[in-house]
Length: 220
Image: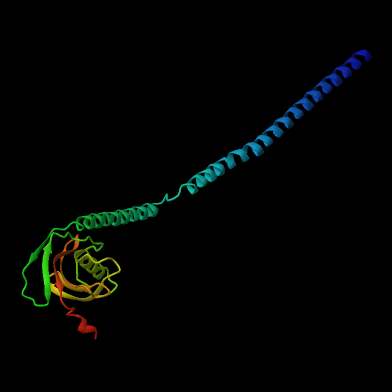
């Protein structure tokens, strides 16, 4: 009877020891799983959270590296290009007209003006213009219209640039002007008839070489 009780106590102790050992192992495994899950949550979550930021920064950097990417820049560039094209076109037309006006055939015409030494017409071309829109004759100094009138008079008379004095500009008719000019030394004085051609500028039509400057009295 004593031995039976002794074996019974030993079996109970052995069974309890095995249960304790199994429980300890399960607790260790559980603790390891918890540590792994916590680590995955901490480190893995940061990577996922940081990824969108990295993509956003990359997108911002790519956009910053693209100059003129806005529609406003595109419109500005288009306007500047159109303006540049217009200026180049006007310059090309002016250069072409200057070339044509270097070899102008003239024809002497009769005149009953006693102050005219000789008068002649020619096949001058309009000198070109930078003006746009409806044309209104402007005689004021410093205006584009007056500068182009004087240029047309210079072309028709053959006076060199910088060696011409404009004495008078007057209305000669609808979109027509009569310019009295001379060289700076007043050795030659001319009366030049000009006509405006839409989109092409002032065109000389007739030149009269004068005996005397009949407009000089206005400045005395």
